[in-house]
Every structure is written in structure tokens, then in C-alpha cells.
Amino acid sequence: MGALLRSLEGKRVAIVVGSGGVGKTSVSAAIALSRAMEGGRTLVCTIDPARRLATALGLGSLGNAEALVPAEAFARSGLAPKGQLFAMMLDVKRTWDDLVARHAPDAATRDRILGNRVYQQVSGALAGSQEYMAMEKLYELSTERDYDLIVLDTPPTSHALDFLEAPDRILDFVGNETARKLFAPAIDAGRFGARLLQAGTGFVAKTLSRFTGSDVLSDVGDFLGQFQGMYDGFKERASAVRTLLTQPEVGFVLVASPSPLSVDEALFFHDHLRKAGMPVAGAVSNRVTPDLWPFPGGLPGTEPVAEALAAALASAGPGTEDLAARLALTLQEHQAFARSDAREVERMRRGAPGPHVAVPRLPGDVHDLSGLAALAAHL
Ligand SMILES: Nc1ncnc2c1ncn2[C@@H]1O[C@H](COP(=O)(O)OP(=O)(O)O)[C@@H](O)[C@H]1O
Ligand SMILES: [Mg+2]
Image (cartoon, rainbow, N blue to C red; front, side, top):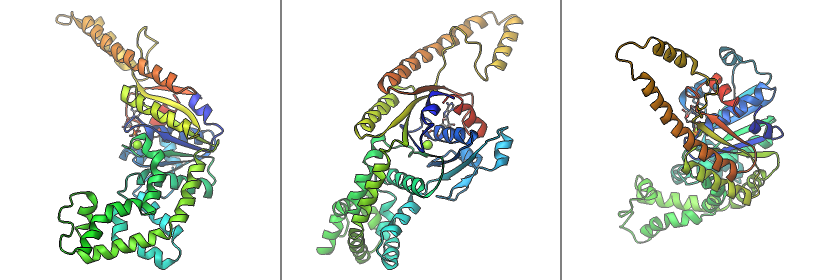
């Protein structure tokens, strides 16, 4: 077992963060798989699995439903887990609706908000919405279910800090700070009659311009009024969610590719986690180009290539005199990438002290259980 998985051994929640495309979803699923292999009951809550990975995990189109990865799927990949792996895909809209239902004082208010078109259009598109709903779902799962480990994958393209600022943004929203600013033009427009949203090109104006003027105004009014009444409930909940993120049973996992920008972002996030008192369990440098010099006895997946090359060199006939020279050039180019990656891996290791693992670029995409197991072997 690698340094990261060892560091996560006592944890009940792992939150995987990093910039877009670095391998967060893959690492999240690999962590959950690994604990399930050893006998744990684990859940990976993901946001944007690639279609093939979603299929491999048995995730259909159902959002917010926890699904057990079937034994046959493991058997097909030659794996025999001692525990159970569950997977789910976060449905941001449904999580918002559940939250509104939880805080609405009565069924009539709940239905009125859920049916409000301003709420429907704005809630899912609000900045920080995905991030906050991911935390909210995590809170619900960790307090209401009995998994040994829940792994939370985080949204695809966000800047890392969006994740930490999300609760404040949502509270601003619920407390109508954001809403008042957003809707001020619409309210003014109503008051002064005709110039209804003519000049607006922003998201809200575009959204609102789909309705007729008087409908907008009554929907905006309802929206502002009814959310106001739920502010205290939302605030309490957001504070409980934030407290969960500082508990010792939680571990943040930073993932970065060996590129300067991605490492910068991971280290920036690392700093903010520390300042916010949120425990970092470890860091992953993912898709690292391995150093091939001196040859470390071959990498997984290179053997057939090596054999084919040896055969080609042995039987090199006319016209192939420069084969060795071309191979040398390829190796030099490879080594240039490896050196540059090694520098970034080192920067990550020094900037985020604690357990750190470097995962090589694997021969194929990580799109099934065997791929996840191969990735987990490096964690
Ligand atoms: N170590 C690795 N080697 C090869 N491919 C990888 C590795 N890690 C991730 N991938 C691939 O990179 C792509 C992006 O990974 P993903 O986990 O979806 O990133 P993110 O969730 O951060 O956007 C996917 O196609 C995945 O299969
Ligand atoms: Mg992802």
C-alpha cells in the first residue's frame, strides 16, 4: 500500500481536489476501490465521470442514487473485493431541491419555491452551486449513512478556491444579497414601466426575458420573500458542513499534473486548506512521465514494444541504418519531458509536505475497474 492510502487509513471521508482534467475523478474512484478491496464498505460520489468509467461503475442516468458496483463487474476485471464499492453521481439540481424541502417551513412554501421559475433557472447556474451541493451531499451522506469511507470527487473545471468559498456564496444567495443585486434592474424596470430588461445581456436578464414582465415580477417577489424565511436554517446547515470539513476523520487529497500551472494551483489550495484548519491527507502528482535512464527494467506495457524494437534492430536491413539514431532521439525527447516532470513533482513534494505519491502516465485511459486497480497500485 502506498503512502497516500496509508495516510487515509483512519479517515471516513476523503475529498479529492485539484484543477480540471488532472485525474480527480480517476483518483477518487481508485481510492474507494482500494478500500473496498480490503473489506471496507465504500462510496465514491462523483460529478463528471467519463462515460466509460460511469458504465464500468454501473452508473446509469440516475442522479443522487447510490448504486452497488455488481460482483460480475469485478469478476470481469479479475478482481475479488472483500468489501463493497458503491458509486453515485451528484445531481446538483436535485440536491438543491432536497435542501429547499428540508428548510421550507411547510409543504406549500416548498412547492411554491420549487415551482418558482426564477429559482429553477438561477439555482443550478449560480457560481459555487456545484461546489456547495457537493459538500451538502457529503454532509448528508456522512451523517445519515454508515460507509467506512466516502470519497468526494469535486467539480470539473472550477478554480480550487471556489470550493472553499462556496458556502459564503450560497448564504449570500439565500440571504438575498446576490439576488437583490441581480434583480435590481428587473425590479426597477417594473416600477418604471416600459423599459423592461431591454438593455440586459447578462445571464439573469436573458433568463428573465423569456417570461412576460408581470410574471417575472411576481416570481422575483416570491423568490426573495420565501428564501428570506429560510436563511437561518441554511446558515446553520452551512456552518455544520464547514465544521465537518475540519474534522480529523476528513482528509483532503490534492491532485496535480506535473505542469507549472497545475502545481501552482494545488499549492495555493494547500495553503488555504491549512489556514482554514482543514486536514490534508496527502498529494498526488498524476500522469508523470517516467525517467527511463538508466533503464529500470521496463515499465508496464512496454514489453511488447521493446521486443518488437529488439527484433527490428536485430534484423535491420538496408534502409534502416539510422534506426538506432532515431531511437536515441526519441529517448532524448522522452527524457526531456521526464526531467521537466521531475522538477514539478519535486516542487509539489516540497510545497505540500506530507504523504506524496507520483503516479506514472498509464498506458491507457483509466476507464474500467482494472484501470482503477492499476492506478490504485501507485497510491
Ligand atoms: N495516471 C493516468 N494515466 C493515464 N491516464 C490517466 C491517468 N489518470 C487519469 N487519466 C485519464 O485522464 C483523463 C482525465 O481524468 P479524470 O479523472 O476524468 O480527471 P478530472 O476528474 O480531474 O477532470 C481521463 O480520460 C482518465 O482516464
Ligand atoms: Mg472529474
